[in-house]
Length: 182
Length: 354
Image (tube, one colour):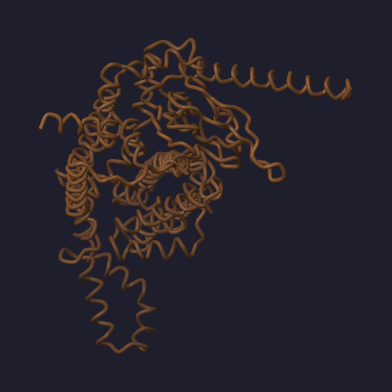
């Protein structure tokens, strides 16, 4: 009987709920958020407010998080698993742009421009993601403007870093083509 | 494209758990189906109240007041204000309704005198028995046993049902205090494919509904105060009641301002006030222009943008379904529903589902 009960507790239908309750009790989510580079500089109490707004989503291997061309409405932080970012080109097919590991963020551009997604995000394996969307950010701006300002500053830094990396990559490509093939 | 594990025989614990979940879901659905009608009004009213009051609770939250305490304070303050206003204003409004009932036979006689020419023409066209019957009906509607205010009286009797008000406040409290968690729990049920779209739709419709309801409430209040004050200055009787009625009617685009002004002009025509009808009409027109060009743009910002035929059909349908209350809420509800459909269509296209 005890064995049956312990198996029940570990069942996927049930264990998720149990782990969430445990996670809330021990503030595990906040502990983990403290380690996310994108959220650097945010205090524990700020992260507790942010954690109230984050949406936990679970994706199975191969499942689409968002598709290139979809309206963008928010960003995700990878808690576990790996996310594959691919560009879908009608002439060249699927081009892999990057693989994101736990702690990485993606889709943050949508929080600024609400434009269409520039690439497709797919779960490489069983993934747990935390999503923050424009409505949540609006709410954070209204209730905790200081936290929202800090978060937006971090997001801006991440976007500018990515832009610099892209510029460097372009320069390398230009220099490579100027030198020629020989 | 989720991978699926090969089929294997279910262990006993699986069957137990599955049976438990099925029983739980069936039970919940049965309870919801039975209680849906009972809870529908407080749930919708509580949700709308929470949307309207959320900026105040957020402002308190920003100043460090915990959300449950902020929600309790805001709802408590609102309930107290409504209770005080009702205690002070309701006897006045009811006194004016009673006074109108007492004077209504005089108004009918005066109207008959003023319209004697029309009655003569009607006398030639309509058989006298039918005309007498119509006159009797009109008088019956205006006197104690069949006043046109009966439906309003019913409305006032039904509205303050204690359990509905309490349930509305409880729903609003939980939504204000734990809105983010409730939304997250609801969104947790949405499949990944539709998650972002649903969340975006929820936020946008909530924002649209909130700004419309807050704006319209302020606009109606401003109109009610302006009209009541102006009619008092013009010495029109029942100014307070007419102001409240005009303020409520103002929620209906196109027809509302006219419907709100007609009773005051009619009172002048039947000799209830010495102020000429055209002075009252000009004053009401001036208030309507101030509303159109100053108050409405500042409070609501954008109109519901409904074609006139939809407004007329909506009012007729509202009257059929819910009397005066139905007429007042039908057009705003149609407007909000239209906004929801437009948002849904845009999102379905944006997320490449359509």
